[in-house]
Amino acid sequence: MLVGHVAAGLVAKRLEPEVSLGTYVFAALLADLIVFALLILGVEHFDAVPGVTINRAIGRDLYYSHSLLMLLIWGALLAAAWFYRRRYPRGVWFIFGAVVSHWLLDTISHRADMSLVPGVPKLFGLGLWNSLPATILVEGGFWIIAIVVYVRFTRLRHWAGRYFFWIGAVLLTLVWLGNIRAGLDPDPVKAGIGGLIFFGLIVAWAYWMNRLRPEKD
Image 1 (cartoon, rainbow, N blue to C red):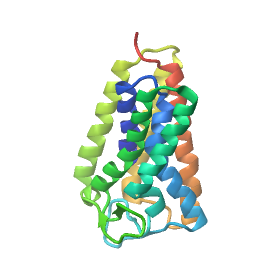
Image 2 (tube, rainbow, N blue to C red; image 1 turned 135 degrees about the vertical axis):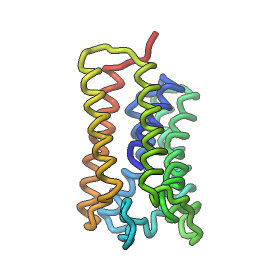
Image 3 (cartoon, helix red, strand yellow; image 1 turned 180 degrees about the vertical axis):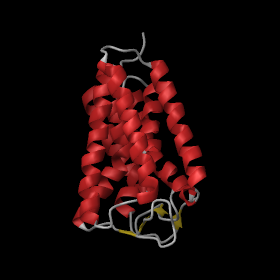
C-alpha cells in the first residue's frame, strides 16, 4: 500500500491530535523506510512475479522490516523516543498503533510475503493486489475517507495549507495509481534510493501540513 498507509496517518491525527501529522505518517510508513534501506544493503529482497499485473513484486525475506514481531519492536522504540520528548502517554499508543497498522494493511493487500516472526517460514497475505478493481475500491476508498476526515477536522492557518495539501494529495494519488501496475524498480538499490527519497518527501509534506492546517478549536 501507499495511500492506504498515509490514510492511516490522517485518521490517527483525527483520533489523537496532540501528535504531529508528520510523526503519524512517518510511523505508518516506517516499515517501508526500513525496507528501502535494507534493500540497498542487500539484507532484504524482492522478486518479480510473472503473470501478475498489479505491483509485480513479492517480498522474499521481509523479516526485519515487515514481520509483526519486528514492527511491534520498531513501534515500541519510536513511541518511547516520542514519549521521552513529549511526555504524553496517550500519544504513545497511537504512534505505536500507526507503526503496527502497516502489518495489518500490508497483510490485506500483499500476496503471501508477510511473516509473524523473523525466520519463521509461515507467511500471510490476503492478496487484495490480485484484483485491480478491488485495490482501487478498498485502498482508494480508505484514502478518500481519510482525506475527508482530515479536511473537516482541520482549519487553514495559511492559504498554502489549502493548495499544497490538495497538490500533495493529487500527486500521491497519481503515483499510487501508476505504482499499482508498474511496481518496484527491478534494481534493489535504485528501488531503495528512490523509495527513501519519495517517502521522505511524503513525511516532510505531512509535517508541513501539520503546521499549515492545525486542528479546529
